[in-house]
Image 1 (tube, helix red, strand yellow):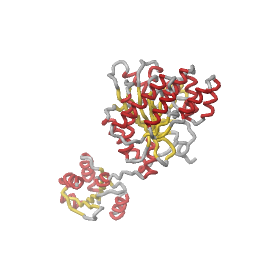
Image 2 (cartoon, rainbow, N blue to C red):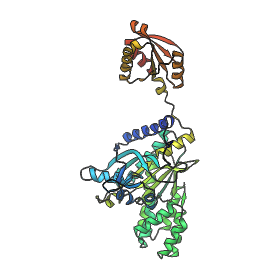
Image 3 (cartoon, rainbow, N blue to C red):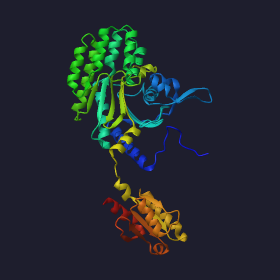
Image 4 (cartoon, helix red, strand yellow):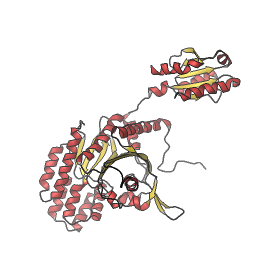
Length: 435
């Protein structure tokens, strides 16, 4: 029997995984830059926790099973519910607010595998807990802007909306949260006509339905004009107007922080997760027809999990999709230092192997990347192998070198060979790699 990866899962080979590491490195730099504390949560959670506010589509794609004790568990399909549980468990009673938490981890959904959609995928996350102010939402947008810019993307857009606008209209018209969530799920999946059928089923007047249609058609890059049009439509809905003003404040603060105008405002925009209460957004790159990340405000989620009423906003950049976009846009960071720092060591005589291994050990202690030849290749084959692996230096050590306490160092880039005293190797390589 020939074993293959499970459908929807994939192996990440060195060249691809190097790009994942590059993205993760930048994410962690931003944890530090914005003072987010990194945490890690279990990949397994109680099914009820993950299902409570995930939305029907995500609930249907969860990996769900019973453990040996009969407990119903699931692999996390996303990580916000886990963050809410972690906050309630460890921080709610004692932590000073706002609390900034970050994470990196794998998620699982039994989706139909296709371009950019895998059953195992990695997400990063930034969660700002304990502030309802517009500047908190603007900070999350700024973090995502910084992430994409630092990775090397020059051309990307934020699709931004506010679920509170439509929620407040529906609330004022007597439509409860359960039906609202169903409507948002349909809008998220572009089943707009089905959403309108629900409006009619719940006796919304034609006037209200036409207002909602007009609102959902407001989209574009002229944010000021769209905000003014929304205000004009919502004269009879004061709470919905407050949401429009909140969105305006968020976007104004984001732009005033020195960011380029990358905003596509879409007031008919929804996301599939039921816990969103305010501003929502997704990140898009031209020529890539899928979002590479997104987020929004979820002021009721912690309370829904039996915690104290706590405002929160966050984002989840999708690392797999960002790497896919990097490949498409040919954004590769060539790590010259990694090449310059690699050294291969070959021992020409078994009798001196202990001494040569000690040289390798001493160099590794000083953080040099050492590959030791464990196949006893001929010198010609070894140097060819090292060149293919982009190793810069070869240490060629035989009995005579041990007696004289000096070794031959071959620079595979310049083809020059130098004799260096064993005691001077660390200083020699530090100097070489500094230059």
